[in-house]
Amino acid sequence: MRTLLDEIEGHLLVAAARAEGRSAARRFTAPFDWLTEWQRKEIEDRFEAGYLALSRTSWQRTAERAGQLRAEYEERYRTLRRRLLAGFLLTCATAVAVLALLPEY
Image 1 (cartoon, rainbow, N blue to C red):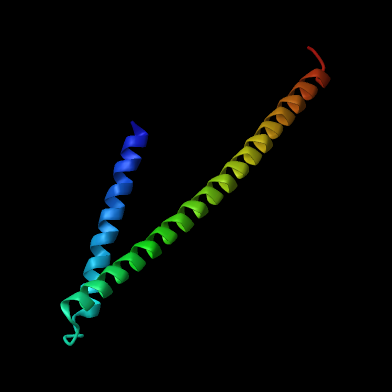
Image 2 (image 1 turned 180 degrees about the horizontal axis):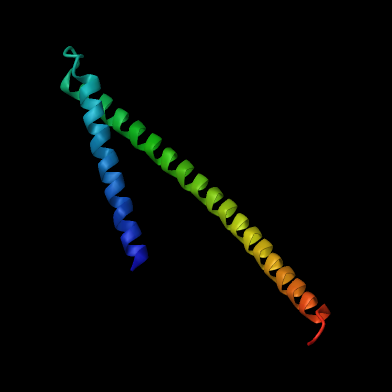
């Protein structure tokens, strides 16, 4: 089920990026009233494709960085768990040693 939701989210992101690219392309070509309709369409299509490629690259970099941060977080978490366990065991060993050394009444 999660995979399906991820795919749907991906399609929605691409659709939104395409819409943003088309809108940006129209704003870019608007001042060039001397362009023919074919030229305007060609420029807008190329602009949209470039915008989408840039978005994909950005998403890939973000995903790679998220993976790196996750790996770093997991390593720090494992280190913290080991330290806490070592501290707990040391505390327990110290308590047992102290109790063993106390004289019995």
